[in-house]
Length: 88
Image (cartoon, rainbow, N blue to C red):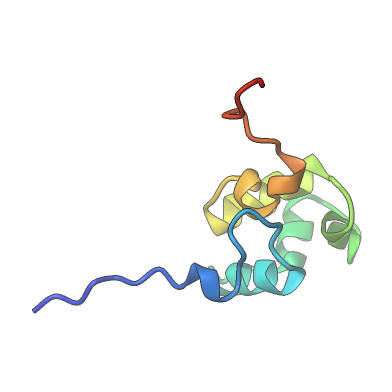
């Protein structure tokens, strides 16, 4: 008997809301990557990438999302408005 793979994302992420910094760090950790690793890849000074938690930083958002394996719009939906809205 094969067990169904259960989506437990909702336990630490509210769908449609920006992920918390802890959720982002946990997702990176699960992939074996740290914020420090991404800073080194982008040639940033220590702790610079943490700005992404407080303000829009497209380059940092893209790097983090790529390491996690999702679109930046999944992690920060408030920063990437949906294109599927219909005009009233």
